[in-house]
Amino acid sequence: MTLGDKLRSLRSIEGSLRGLGRPLTQSEVVTAMKKELGRGLSQAYLSQIESGARPHMTNTSRDLLARFFRVYPGFLVDDPPGYSRELQSELRMADATIDSWLYAGADQFTGDAELARALRNVAQVNDSRGAILLLGEILRTPGLAERLSEVLQPKSLVGSGHPPPASHN
Image 1: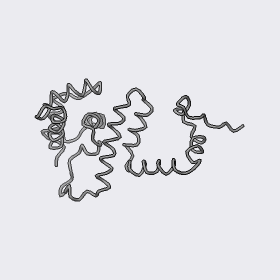
Image 2: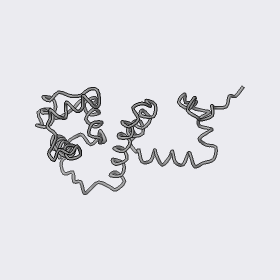
Image 3: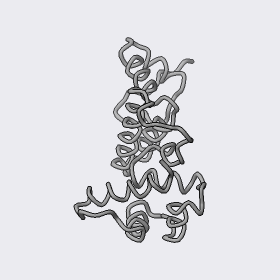
Image 4: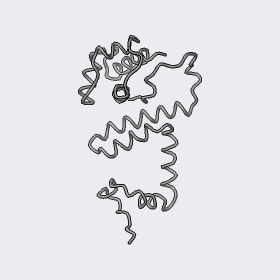
């Protein structure tokens, strides 16, 4: 599937999700991006991408489209020749779903910039599923989270209801 095909499909899905019963137009995508994300792309640029006249995007454009459509940025490329969706493993599909969930979560916590940034950081890791499983193990291991907090001393824990890291004089 080409990048243009993927964007047309995403516009169709987004139109359905918004109750329109039709795909969003390119102009509607541009307007909604600016309203919802505070910035966006031009309709001409989006048209060039969809038509294949512009086969590659900047990272900024890819990230904006990924945030708007709530997909993993790596999804927004042409599939290689011979690629088949049936070749994707269940774990890779789970990872893409997790990444979409993390990006959507980050968008929900715009009032907590540190949390939103942390969710996006996890989504951008190559193996976000593994990162979440690792976090689960860290939290499950008695005392490990506290020891890591002392070593890393994240400022986000101060004033968050968590005890401050112990000082070592």
